[in-house]
Image (cartoon, rainbow, N blue to C red; front, side):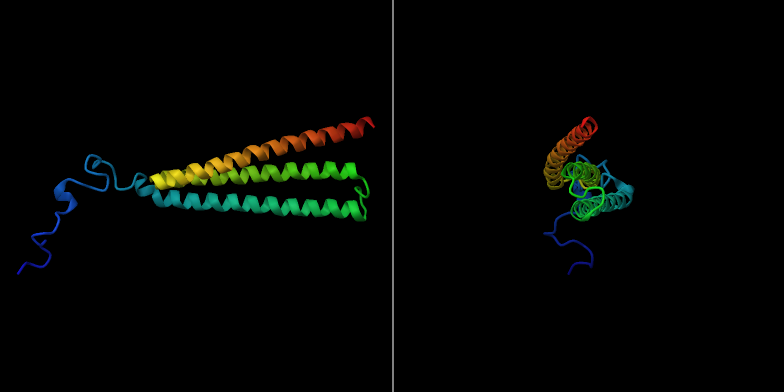
Length: 165
């Protein structure tokens, strides 16, 4: 009969006795987790940045919807835009520009949070997911930037036409 707590004859030796550790022996000088004691702080930062990024995106949608409804109502029922299609186009071009800036900021915050999260838990899976997310968000940011430039160009052209006319 064996003593309580003693390994059986066929049981594997603990990692400490074999020289192996979570990093595979050769990296035994590294801490268990790359970020060590700061991991909870970084996790909290990631959560906070994600929340701020989502709030910025929601704010962009809210402001955009409010401005669009105002422009539509002004065009249809009165106010400075009543029946003036050019003024409406200028107003909606400015709206697209404003919303695009907020969307870009929100996306950049979400990318920053993903980068920090990958630094906390650097596995091949998290790096692959980060690469895919960053690629999608960079493409989205690029096309949003193009849209903002187009809206600025349109607003500038409409404003210049209004001054010369």
